[in-house]
Length: 157
Image (cartoon, rainbow, N blue to C red; front, side, top):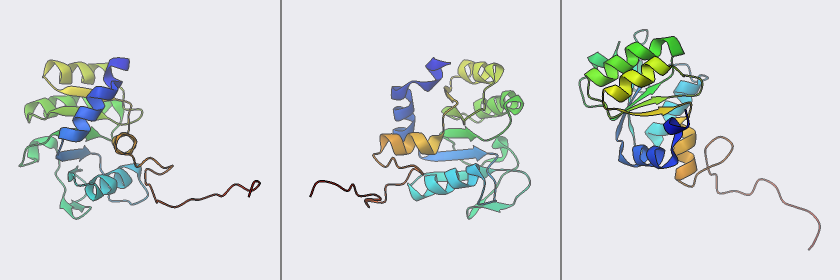
């Protein structure tokens, strides 16, 4: 799986993507997908929710499936169970997406193969928010650089 976690590939995806469809984006602010979507919006990406159970998420229209998204998608970011990945990969290929990005734990060899054979870049078992923060100098325990010192060492004066 290391080929799916190549740092140069990840950096290229992060720096060339503009539109990210998040499959499984939740409207619940306590869910990881919502936090990631919010973070990506704040960093200039166009986030498109794909969730058939919610009409709007993060101020954007939510679509029932990738095939319903009416604009080009650079990255399909997946927050779904691994067994859903083959169908999501087929949809990502069908809409001409550039990258299939599988969040932590979303590992499915068949889905990876479908996406690769369809010409997509594949990133597996990585968090888009964490990787963005890592490569953009904003790494902090939550992915934010607050520009504040949070602890001061005692001792030498």
